[in-house]
Amino acid sequence: MLNVLTGNILPVFSVLALGFILGRGRVVSETEARAANRLAFLIFQPALIFPLVAQFDVSTFPAKALALYVVAEILCFTLTYLIARRVFGREHGESWLLAMAVVFVNTLLYVWPISVLIYGTAGAAPITAIVAWDSTVSFAFFIISMELISGKDGTSAAVRSMGRNPVLVAIVLGIAMNLAGLAIPAPVETALHYAGAAASPLTLLAVGIILSGSRLTPSPVVVTVSAFKLALFPAIVWALIAFVDPGDSAAPLFLLTAAGPSGMMAFALALLYGVRTDAITPVIIWTSFLSLIPLALLA
Image (cartoon, rainbow, N blue to C red; front, side):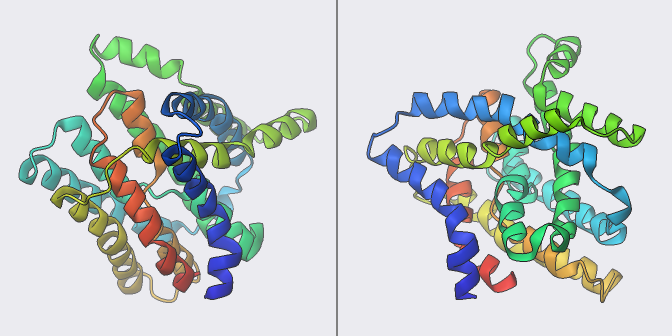
């Protein structure tokens, strides 16, 4: 466990921690970090997502385990949204993103790089399947839903905005190329790999800087959402797979993914669509820190 923690998990976590330290020390301003986060979201993440989607071998999908994982996502998302909305009285958009923070794990930028370091690309295939799902269906769903929730000019304006979103465009083009069986030209693939490599460290660094200016005192809503993320969601994933599909070789890696921290995308979307972040921010910070040991134990 100690080798996994120090050799694979902490090096990735350290980029987020470095951003937090730079922000607290006022070495880099929040304005600069927000600009970097926007660049990562609009440029580098599409470059990372497109080849992942275009080149993923669907035949390697652990279909049953993935379906159970999705069921767990739906159950936890619905429960969290209802509690945030009705018990804590949070607004619709914020409740939506708090629920997203429970089920949308930081797979693409955090758990996946760690799993590749530990198991190699082939061994991390089950997590790659979750990344592919989250990067296409889940992420697109949350972008589209936030466009509709925050759209002040109606559905037609939201649809036009979606068509200009580089992440959605990358997802759609990647799916189209995958279904058509087309290969990415080698020079383009090289450029995408080069640019996509910047997505994870730049986003983690920028988010760490932005988060550094937030209060860390856990409020009741923060404690509840963090507990749902770190305990309830992994427990439901484990229970569904254990009782419906026991013995599935992909189960340990699905549980590892579920135990990961809340995805940065809930925070990024909150910034993008003007949703308050006073609860979303500490949820991401606390789950990022508290998930270190569970990840090391499960890896």
